[in-house]
Length: 249
Image (cartoon, rainbow, N blue to C red; front, side, top):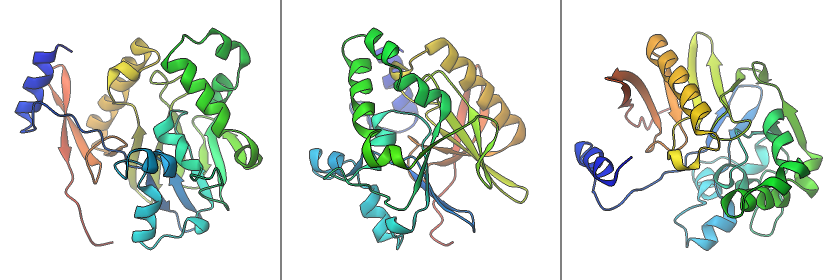
């Protein structure tokens, strides 16, 4: 988008035109059988590097009365640092020491492929490969299990292939009875970060058309807290209808 279009969009949303804030919203799902984390944020190392601006997930879990040791499953949507770095603490020990680590099969295959790594362009992609080889090693690999698209990852949480933002990006549908929440991860994000922009847009429109048609609740990793919304059509695009924060459970 052109700079003036971005400024106009920010102004229309009553947001400052000279600053752009990107939230990070990992979530916790208690299925009744499992205590599940979906994506992990930038982790303690990110917290230290940014002086507490990022990487607050473990701190917020503790404030909410959730013991990281009680988490028994961590589901990863894709292998970007703001989703996987929180698997490790600042000392490289496991952030969730009793959790099974569940990752998309196609995504894991891509980032662990030496041939793909050798062909990665200098800069961001090369750095992503290096970071993923750092994170997905040692104790993380001992607890890792890949999952397939279109199947339940754990009871009540089903994986949906939404490739484009990354090679094997997955979203997840969390279901309880007749209620469903679509946990999109990075189906929408800054397009600059899309690995395959054409595929990313195709899947973005496919997902959002479905959300509009089914009036399904959406959780966006980079949406403003509490990161819940419904979506409606708006011309050739879409409009987010935020769901207010509810302090009661």
